[in-house]
Image (cartoon, rainbow, N blue to C red; front, side):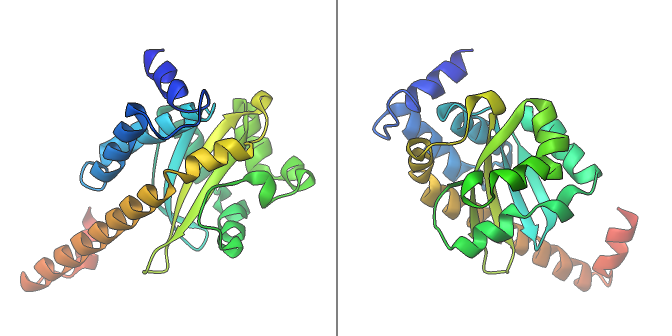
Length: 211
């Protein structure tokens, strides 16, 4: 896989941010609020660069997922997560937020191994798919929502080490800006749509009920 080899060269080989691949990923990150179809590729490249399998981007209200996108490997798992109502078991976003750390943390920094061994998300979704180690970062939005970036590894690869987390931290300010911009754009679009419907004499709720 040439794309994966290139991402790995940019990532775990040197964990260096001084290369064309990293610059290209950063460029894509800033394009993503305007071209949301870029997010799966970005998440995949960040995963591959840190010896991971795939990644997720979620917007959350409390423990309720409002929207998400994912690299191809993670799409069926995220669909299983939503369809099975696993959100109520997900302790990582709120625990991560409580850490007040503006960077990526491994799951072992916010959960114990004993907790992971009995966690339904790990045991019923991630581990059966061969995954089971994650690195994540939580970005609070002014609206009160959370923007969550999650990068996942195969179980046999082992937990995310500090060098990989530090590499991801180099992208975190860019991801935060792009994520917040995307969230703000969605709010403005929703507000504009509501105002337009109001001017037309149509309640927004009526559209939602028929869409």
